[in-house]
Amino acid sequence: MQRTFDDLGTPLSDVTFCVIDLETTGGDRNNDLITEIGAVKVRGGACLGTFQTLVNPGRAIPPMITVLTGISDAMVMPAPRIEGVLVSLLEFCGDAVIVGHNVRFDVGFLNAALGRSQRPALSNATIDTVALARRLVRDEVPDCKLATLASRFRLDHQPSHRALDDALATADLLHLLIERAASFGVLGLDDLHLLPKIGGHPQAAKLKLTNHLPRTPGVYLFHDARDEVLYVGKATNLRQRVRSYFGSEDRRKIGPMLREAHRVSYIETPDPLTAGVLELRYLHQLAPRYNKQGTTWGRYCYVRLTLEQAWPRLAIVKDPAALGLHLGPLPSRAMAALVIEAIHTVVPLRRCTARLGRNFVPTPGAGACTAAQLGVAECPCAGEADAIRYAAAVDMVVRGLTGEPDVLLAPLRERMLRLAAAQRFEEAAAARDRAQALAGAIRRQRMIDDLRGAQRLDLRIGTTRFEFDHGRLLDASVEGMLTAALPLPAPELTPLDRPLPRIAADETLCIARYLDANSHRIRLLHCDGQWAQPLMQLASFEHRNAA
Image (cartoon, rainbow, N blue to C red; front, top):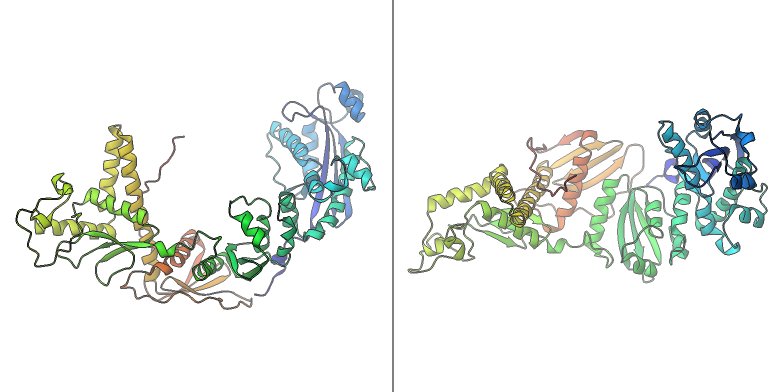
């Protein structure tokens, strides 16, 4: 895919940094106050300007602070109060990246002063030269104090516990650290932000594997020495996401995966949706051993209503049958079991697994099943079921699973509330879980059916044009850019009168969720079928903690 300049990130040579240093009456931002501010604005190694002023704290400066900084009460007496300095300082900083040696100290004091002046806190990005120094030069110095670093590396400016001198020394240190960081492939601002987090990561030496990655959406693949794919992931920014594994990523499997990693390959995509779809196709095809999510589609199942039988029942099946009504694919048998329990709570369908044909005759003297004896299920196998009443119950299930979900969900909600009112909280929670599973399954089915029902669908979101067919992504392109065809084909087309195969469910749901989240940005270009969202939203049974 053709690159744009934006894909290269913000080169450090183009970033404006504002290096700030403060002198204060003490170390507590909530109780101590600023006595001096020094700032230096730099870009591309050149100084763009300086800012320096004493500040009257409105209280006596402790003697030990005067000894340390040389700033006395007499010096700050004619100086402006902080309220009169903040406007000028904010104007000087602008939207530059704020840099400090222990930047949290300086930004913390400034934000405290802004808060006391009823002003919003700083929103600028920040860089801490202490954290960078610990990552890049810790083995060369006894400590990472500014004075130690300035002396060891013979910086042009030396700190003196005065704000401007210290800011100038910190600016010199920043430039030195940026030069050192280049050996880690740090060329952009995002790389510099991430570098301190990589710190002492045991696999930090492998960071060079990411140097070739672009800052575009796409799919990345970790390979071992035999070129076997270990892990597949997607990203809106490939370089930033993959480099994050060497810093903030703490999942248990990531450490062993990085130890085996030998190279990282990638496929650029024009947008995040295409990256998500392509990731799923790779996961289904390769099943990398360090991936879990996206590789369990083989365990998906369906809830089937056996409409071809004289006395239909609900069953969990791995593959859809030619006849009957199917709900799914569902992500697990546990969810399917909850769905069936929810429906059984409302509708007295038979629970037995016997196949009852059209000419079934109950065995004389056969006893009713336990559910029938409790009055919560019909029992045709014992001859204790009315065909007309049973047909009405089946019709209720069909309506609830297709166009009228409240037929099933409303009684479940009433039961849950009734149990809660009676302080039978465990039973109410179980009722909520069953109702939540059923509502989630119906919502999932709606998303699948709506997108498949659109058939051939052509639309635009922002600058990206998408082509879908029965819930499958065929193509994605950006106007004015050369975009390669998808390296893996879409799942096989399934007719609308057949349930969606398990292997295709993840892709269709990925697309449906993305389109739903970006519905306000969609420009519809063509649709062969019908594509619309239901007017009534499904009730939510999600558990909410009391505030």
